[in-house]
Image 1 (cartoon, helix red, strand yellow):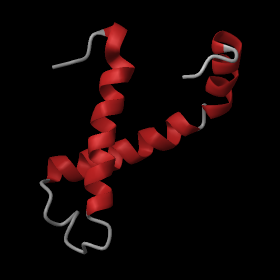
Image 2 (tube, helix red, strand yellow):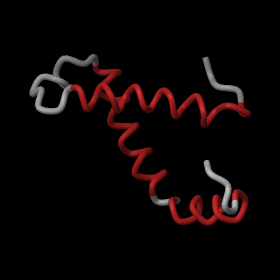
Image 3 (cartoon, helix red, strand yellow):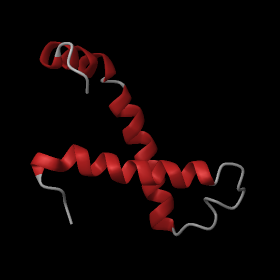
Length: 74
């Protein structure tokens, strides 16, 4: 089910954390990708591409964080 717009980033962050944990648990497992369904393999490749695209915006997000949050802790 899609996330509601007001909690999309929060929900997605939790899901991505689960995916990253699964990936880290399988570092060194030669069969990790081979054992996945084609849908899972496609998904992990799409996630990797999206993460790279998202990271390109880190300067913008860091600037917004400083402007809007100031010295408050996140």
